[in-house]
Image (tube, rainbow, N blue to C red; front, side, top):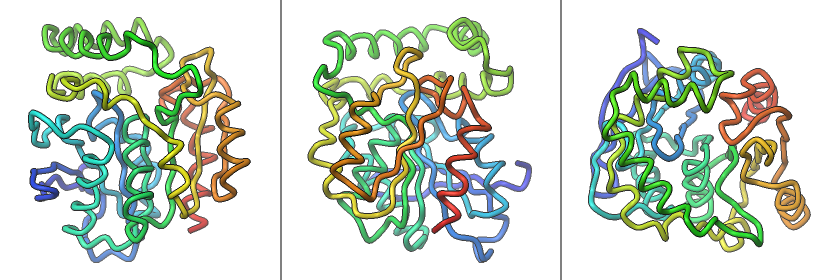
Length: 270
């Protein structure tokens, strides 16, 4: 990680911070953009980037309102995040990169593939917020507002202790990286909780590139159910599903080896 570089780029009217693994942007490696989930930041992808940097020029971006990127008062829908990433791809002249997104970041990547098909070669969606007919719990928006407010009152060490209680199987390094995003996330990201409603029924039919949907166990917190995954693959043959046993919503953090065994071959197939 010592050779990775950090920089900013102007995209969609804001400043986005990103980290890049390639020591020379002229390196002959295909580009791979990584988009984190809600209340995370770029360091959430450290372990995955280390495992993939031999094959890819990896760009890890802080979403608006997160990490070291700008934190505007509005503009936190998937369409806004997708426009941000489209601007980053254009500004860095990445061509048609592959992308991975987790949770909120997966919704961003899916929206990008739908709205800007010329900017995506293949995508990986790690447990996007795609719920079935039951929809989002009625109080989810309030819960997320309370969570961000709580993080704002805690030290990083206190956040780590809180995270350890909820994720006892994570190692200390993963947990410490997870905490950084919590110290940097802006309350602005949850001002409009209607943005949490992702209508994947209108987005998915517009995705034409090869897509890997990584799902987990709903009993452990996975969002995409087997029923939703089956509906997606039945209607859209470009989508493959990789179910990771023993994982919850943070799939790669819970079962990293199994996650990489599914994701790396899919990416390299491009």
